[in-house]
Length: 564
Ligand code: NOJ
Image 1 (spheres, rainbow, N blue to C red):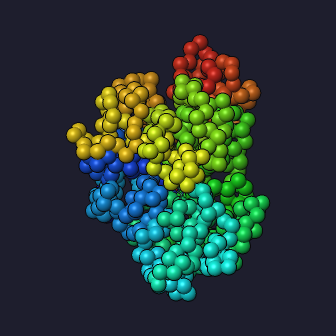
Image 2 (image 1 turned 30 degrees about the horizontal axis):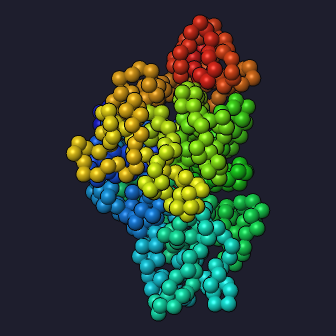
């Protein structure tokens, strides 16, 4: 369907059959949060025209694939994770023809496309939900969702005690077509996001059709949102809060969810080279492992790595347990749901957890320290065997914007927790491209609207234009690292070999396909300790995250060395 450009075709990875069928095992994948990437039409919201215009930037960055956050028609109650039509594009982002053009243009740059599919819930404006409201209790239309009578004398209490992940009850009561107070429906997220009932054959068949719709358009991968939540115990029992995710939990990580992904895998396998990646937040790696494998998902996001503190022993433990899984590894430092990595690593407590976001809000951040560590983490991460995910702006060293005025906050988490949880807006602020003041080239000159979230004026030092001209910038570091990661045989799909190292230091070799130390070995050394450490003599420095003089590696610095 598409013909790659000469530059993409000359990259050996684009033509090797191993790459074509298993690119997702080692790719560098850029997460493009479309609302905040680039605004092509001046309405203050990023769109597909903006993304298309900046494809050369992404090609030059050296990524292999883009994951687009949801781009479908949506009332935007949860920034597009409330979908009213799974087979089209929201007008604020563009048209289906724009998406087709984008997929083709990306392909010409040698870039693959992953899209986000949200199967746990739809929008309350989805035609099926509108029809369910109109059809009334007991109807076939309602059986595609979770409608139940309330408890209490007149049904005035929710059917059970489940809480929304965004705060408040997970149930909302409807008004029936005759005007009377009626049934309740389940929404594990916002009320505008009713949960589908995956016991319904209509739901199962429709999603298989959605997958085929997008694979047929040339999409290479699907990111599955909230992948562990789809199946519910139909008895809808109360939760005690003590059940671990798994078969004893009424809605998290239930065993029957695997049947769904087995059928999705069969669909994906109809299209060579396509992949499925699950958003699965589970503490138990054994349970996590059940999602991946030849008959199920190709891979899952590595959230333990993202949550891990900047601590050598903890990171070593997460890396080892990731590599022990019988599945290709992914390495993730940030995404649109978590605080940006520069800010996390600039705090006195560098661990992260979604539940602890309120605790971190307003925490002092040492940006210089956080940036130094984020640079070191980038080299550590990109040297690990597996695929790496880069959230837009990570390559610029953007930080979490903590001081967004309350009245401008958009994330439903903020409103539903009455401000107790600041939500995720701080990691979603539009990118700075150029210039010395907002909108920093995010919107075209003369744009009619400001960016949908305000950009800090200090980001004038972090624009793509400024960083491109600065050899010491985060952007130049990411470009160099991605180029070396792509060109060095040592970074092919080969395991790592840990090297002896002092406390607080991580050191490992990648030997390349030959598996021997033959001059092709690359060693990554990350110094997370408080003291400088000596580097091996006679090693050639391929890339360092900070200044390296006199044969020593300073604290919070990583280096890639060629070992002869
Ligand atoms: C996970 C997504 O990453 C997040 O942004 C969204 O709010 C929830 N799923 C609900 O769809």
